[in-house]
Image (cartoon, rainbow, N blue to C red; front, side, top):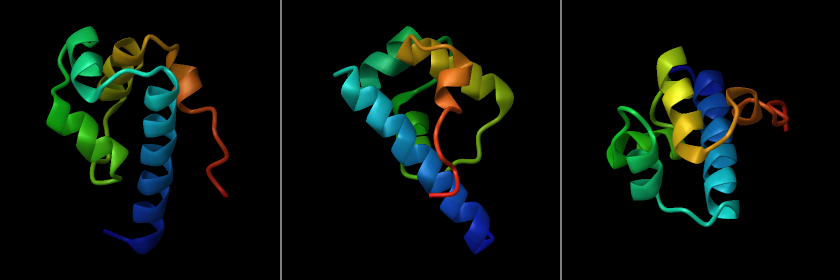
Length: 78
């Protein structure tokens, strides 16, 4: 994986983890609230190890109880 792409995935993962911890919910709870996600997938996303698809983004938003645009609302360049 390109270093630049990896950094982007890591930043996104940190953002998702921050959203989840601010909501005070576990990865297990996110998985239960979503349609198809499992805890391992959520962990991979939060750790910047997974380049997720659009449908996974939608499932993740559902699991967090957020609108998908909220998952993308962060400063990607910081």
